[in-house]
Amino acid sequence: MELRVDVDGEMLRALAYVDLVGRPQPGDIVVLNTTALAMGLGTGGYAHVVAVPNRLPPDPPAGPGHLVKARYTPLQATVLGVDEQDSEWHEELRDADDLDGMPVVIADLHSALPAILAGLSTEAAFPAELRVAYVMTDGGALPVWFSRTVAALKEAGWLAGSVTVGQAFGGDLEAVTLHTGLLAARHVLGADIAVVAQGPGNLGTGTRWGFSGVACGEAVNAAVVLGGRPVASLRVSSADPRARHHGVSHHSLTAYGKVALAPADVVVPDLPGEFGEKVRGQATRLGSRHNVVTVPVDGLAAALAEVPVRLSTMGRGLDDDTAYFLAAAAAGRHAAALLHHDG
Image (cartoon, rainbow, N blue to C red; front, side):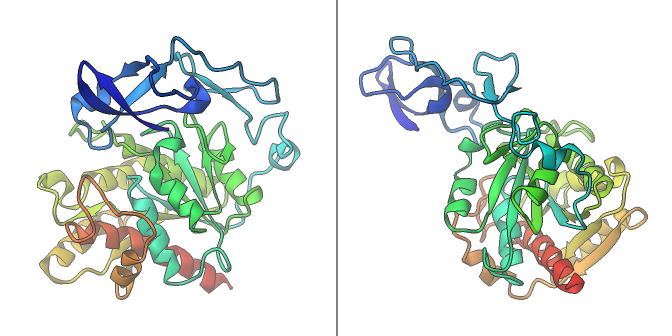
């Protein structure tokens, strides 16, 4: 729930997660956390309601579920895990350990999700021909409710559902680990393809290992262990002023080149000119461990223009950093082609 809150005469934008804090009403006094707003974080932009002290929410109804997420924080949430004993899917997932070759597209940033789906849409129609599940890891925002993108993609029929794993919560399904989240995407949501990425917000320190996207490498490992087919989406930029992110980001080179211990299809968009040559040259560093696949980008720009959400990464739109979105869309195109090849 989005609010406007008067703080000493200044109107602030705020979000209230009503399932956690209740539903504020006009005139209520609220307790705010303004950390992200004060820091000017790109995905922050909002204060967050911590409590409505004069009108507390009702106690949640008694029911199944004993998974606690955002554990040991004041707003920890108890949810029903798809894989726990009280779940109707427990028997299905208790001994499940096979994704049946399902392509698993893995991306560093949340903003890659709609672009990946755009690439899929060039090969198949949603949802008539293809069911896609989003598996959200906990490297960024923990509540999936923070993502307008996920809500809009579901409403448009581009996503069959979402699974929140680890400390992340609020998805159509909740899972303890990325492994059970992927299995739930396949066996419960019936996904043909899963997309794994963190929620909105990316943490980085400018060091080789200190960034939340390092989890991409672990996602490759999980997909392979479970019999999936990992498709590694590269983080590419022609507009980022930081040298470590220009061309193929060091995030991708580290996560896939160092952390991933199992092979994946690393998708390289066939971009034109000197910049394209740079990207292809950087991607060759991953060839000793992975299958580096060059994918054409013809038609992807038109598909990206039809995505039912606003495309934005690090404050840049489609026209500002086309290469970023083309790289993610190329990964989606390749994943769909894997299905067609199998068929």
